[in-house]
Image 1 (cartoon, rainbow, N blue to C red):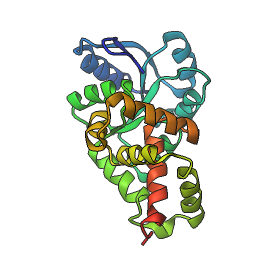
Image 2: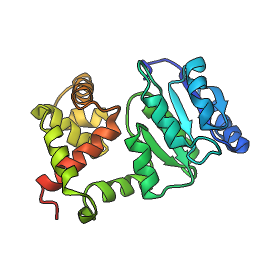
Image 3: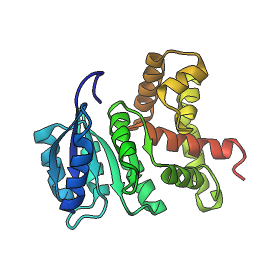
Image 4: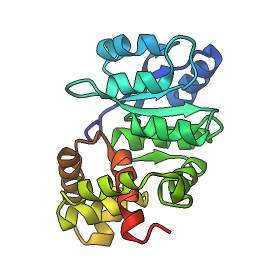
Length: 232
């Protein structure tokens, strides 16, 4: 995560050179974003992250040797600071979305997302905000928030509720707002607290629950709310 005013360092990971070129040109027009490197396969990501120290990684899913889900899992599990990962792909099946988010991705965008939204997504990810395209957000909400709860084991509900119970009332309120896709500023307005306090509650909740990012917190909040709200 960058501090205010810093240039956001971005690593592009895609096996299609044309896609990487397009992303580089797209991001190159933003004065606060710098593309610091490229990788053509997931096997090269760990080394590139170590050398280039990006703030955000734009990660393809389907690559020849190591797919983007495995590469995401590897870099988000590293000790110390790790970059935020936005999965950017044409492949938006439900299982892929959930795999990416549960393995530490900060967001998931389809490649036909308008350029200005991709640029904004990089800024949001660098600021610690969740990043989901509208179609992906709908899939996430439908799948996790209980449109088809019979497909998910009751044990997940119980475990989520138990974990969610570790949080304070204010942390739970912030987590629920995160699950609704609200930004820090919107959460602050809703709960009558400062943005700094919101960030502190998010950080505290992530630490207590041993989670990597806001998306995982949102998933847990949805899992916990299903059964609490009836699970029908």
